[in-house]
Length: 209
Ligand code: AMP
Image 1: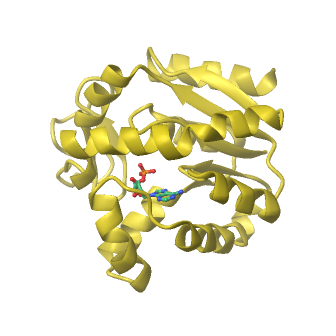
Image 2: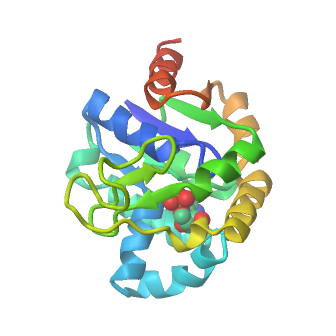
């Protein structure tokens, strides 16, 4: 199963990618996570990517395409993968189709105001990247990661002004991929409202269709 997940920031794409990864036994490849790790470790890639990420803009295509190309060559991706956050532009989608075959594209849909609410409630563990939400998916003890006990943080790009910018970036640069994949017969849409488990069942159903 080679899957691409699409959806604006806050649609719950990462959470569903994690669940689908366990369900199908294939790795979740999140370009956002890989980039954040590079920023945290201050690598050459991290240094180049940071200012774009902090302002809610996309990191240039050539950097991200190279990064994904490299990641897809790792042995765990041979039996399939879930791309979470890539492609985000038509140029990235073209590059991806040259790299590998894709079985389906799942697109998570939510109303814009609901997106703002979701994004500003997100909390993440800086150590193991577990994602929580103060309303939808709170940790057992407020402010602390269930898995490792580390204090949770708000991602720098989850501030409301940056969230608005990220949604705008999605609409301008990534939403055109809906038509792109629809034209190629790969597109499946999933309504991302409701409980995490309900959305997950919808996603699995959409993949059977
Ligand atoms: P995410 O965690 O997927 O929301 O990604 C966080 C940030 O990383 C985005 O706002 C972009 O700045 C950058 N990013 C992640 N994936 C990509 C991509 N495929 N193309 C360009 N920038 C990306």
